[in-house]
Length: 137
Image (cartoon, rainbow, N blue to C red):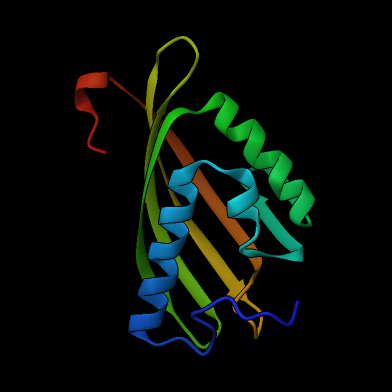
């Protein structure tokens, strides 16, 4: 993967903020193919208690995720950054097939390769049941 995925490391405040916004925009499309292209072919993930290896596993995970998490809407916020790593806080809202709404809160640790593709993503997430009237996103 020699093609660049801008912005690329080393990050500064502006480019780290831009990378976070690009990720938010992509995830809000709920398009597993589009989202998966931000990751290296051999990306490593931990999402809650699930461990994934490789872009194809990520794509399959995202398909399952958005089949379950209906009307998904995400907001990400830059928390910190270094040369090739970004820490993010996020929340998203969704409902299940029974109509129960949730707000999910979490943190992600991202590590990028030299071309700007995410090679590691470690996410810790908690779900809170909410009433539809309490939605913020």
